[in-house]
Image (cartoon, rainbow, N blue to C red; front, side):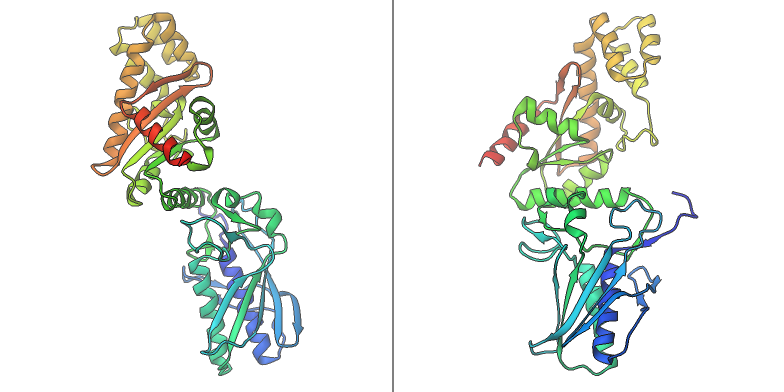
Length: 374
């Protein structure tokens, strides 16, 4: 990320701004084409108001999502708010989701099962902004706010929502109110949500893999249900931290040799921009296993771990090397997990399949399979 990249605003900020504008028009009877709100990040947001519609006891309007330079699929989508008078006593602000806003169908998320997928911070933002307007016009009645996104059902299918158990649309989200032009935070938030959901479903073992291939390997080799596994991308260390924070005592990590060889060197973010000493670590295991100097030079010149693995096989040192790699991987995973989290691992390659399992990996796998079958 460079410092000149443009920040955007979350769906939560858009919903709060639209709700404030609709409330203002409802209570004042005047048209409003721009509104200003305060985001939790203390950044002012003053979007234009579009698609204004007034009726008997309600006003509806929209704010167009501006994601800045972030590659957000909701960019330019219209976030609508319909504000109407509500019969409930107590001067309440009642918030719900309409068309294109997902519904929660599984436990472990920010909102309870059956609720609209409008997260806690956006709900507080909407209520605060609407109450400001109510105070301005001394409104003593309750108001109902319905947030909708006409494109939401289509867009929701392109997000993690279906996997998380949010059906029918997108989520109204955001903790700061602004969108930083980077994808890593959103991905980390998703990993945490998936782990939370697995925990809420009663799992004792967090089953994790860096990518789809690892999840497919678990399914095809061990018959493990993919719906109960979490994809952590390159964020292995962060995922261990999250699992520990959520109270898991056991974690099973299944990954390709190209990723987990880095973990054997203590590298917990396996993205190539962070570190890449795969061949040095493959060569280090080969040295300990008695490889020839010529083989070591060839390993260091390899492009892929599977190419280096072929040299292991040619030298007849694959068993010793795999044992060393598993030992080192186990050490660093459990060093990161600390006293409270036992992390076991499975390593595979595309061409050779399973190449190693840590001491209790099979035990953890059977426990996890028993949980899904139960």
